[in-house]
Image (cartoon, rainbow, N blue to C red; front, side):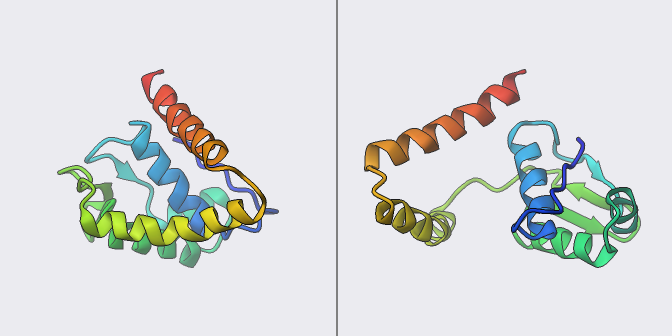
Length: 130
């Protein structure tokens, strides 16, 4: 899996790294137990400070996507990603709230919003099938 970093984006680089790794897991491009590059290696490959990669990895670890071992390095959780529970859904609602509010402020209907979400969901699933 190749990461594509947009250095002109308003989205922080560590967030881009996180989001692309999570999407790689969702698309099954990254499997449980797969190794990720070391912090220094990925930083050198992308041409960014290793502290930026470290921040992304630490947040991915915190969210339960990866494990970091001193000897084994960085791996996608071998036992898989935890399934969504009530705590996850509460966090999801918190994250979506400003997106929904912004959409409402821009006169996006509920149906239009749901269509966008459904389209994205299907896009990721279709890429998984390929």
